[in-house]
Length: 340
Image 1 (cartoon, one colour):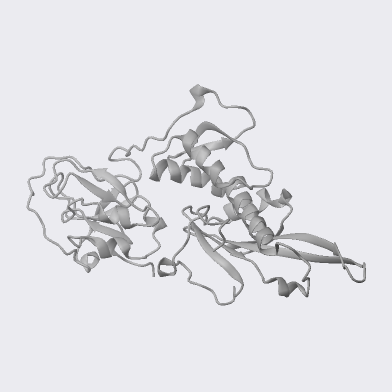
Image 2 (cartoon, rainbow, N blue to C red; image 1 turned 90 degrees about the horizontal axis):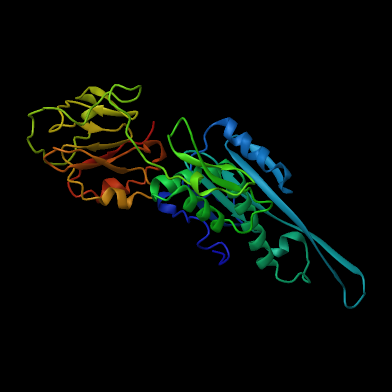
């Protein structure tokens, strides 16, 4: 992998690849994963529109965007004194979905003919690939979602999340300037930075506080408190056929909860694709540490006999089905069901 690109983006290991390694991308140098979701057609169009003035050639097909940057090299033949010119280019492919994959390609110099006289081609190609990637991340909705991810997953303040994004993308062309004035997105409840050219004031700096909606709201009907007396401890593993044996008792922040539920001592099985038997879970944290896309966060469950906190699959839709959490769980209370 290019030293220039190393540590600037997330390396995606083939063992957890969402779409695998494509032989048709024979000249690609790397596949990287950004932990943000871009699934709506309007979001893909927004990314393309934000990059229209970037100087890249843009091609959009279904769930992916191709960005090509061209540059010219020139020299003089030392023997004939004739002018030498060559048009070179690099291409970056942005694959949208539950997470965003970035594939960058650097073709060998021989692909462009016989421009033997071109100097430092690989270094220039690396620089241009990184420039495209930085511009995509910094100047589009991907950057906004990445800031929200930093706030949620790494518990950063909005100011620190913006600084981290800026340090990640130093080569972006015409970089978007974001203030640290927080606005709340209706879908996630996260605070994200807004575009502005005015300097922020100290009073405008805020951080994200994650708060569970009260039981009875539109997407929460399950309470974690109560007077339930069913406190018997349950041993693993989780029943893999529980969906045919149990009924959905309600939801918590949009996540299905399979009964019986009698809080605080009996909490049932939570999730649809990423499922955890809360009555078996002992909160050792292995699943949270193993998950490469931060599906889980801790949820306080006071009064439960096995443990008073559980790994809540709040970003269940971000799961890449790598099975890491299921494989490392000591009490075997996790079961992953791949879509379809």
